[in-house]
Amino acid sequence: MPIHAAEPSVGTAAKQVADHAGTLAKLGLELARLEAKRKAGAIGLGVGAALAALYGLGFLLATAAAALAIVLDTWLALLLVTLGLFAIAGILGLVARSRLKNDATPARANGHG
Image 1 (spheres, one colour):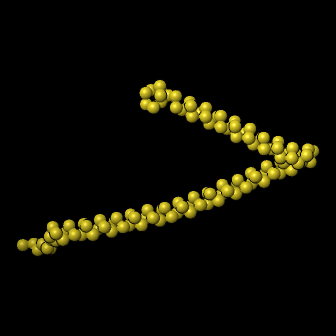
Image 2 (cartoon, rainbow, N blue to C red):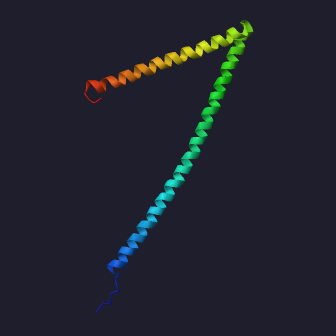
Image 3 (cartoon, one colour):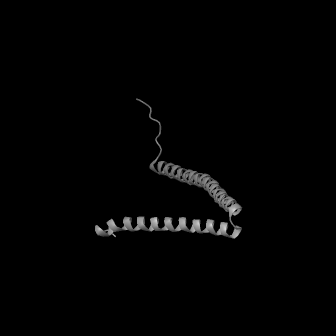
């Protein structure tokens, strides 16, 4: 007659499953925390890069104004650079508004907006 090893009871098996589920949940939370920490670091680097690029743009515009100041009065050179920036901002704003209107129109035509 073969000898069978004693199988664990249903209660013991249920306790083991609960223990393993708890451990799995803790590991999942730890993994999520580590991934969030890594992504936060990457976002911080991205913000730093954007800030450096913004300062670079500012110095580029100051350089353009200084170059214009060679042939024009300084106030006029600064005014021209400022007006150029406002013109670019206005054009980009109009393009954005146009795209938003075009994107919203089909949704309303289909009755989904």
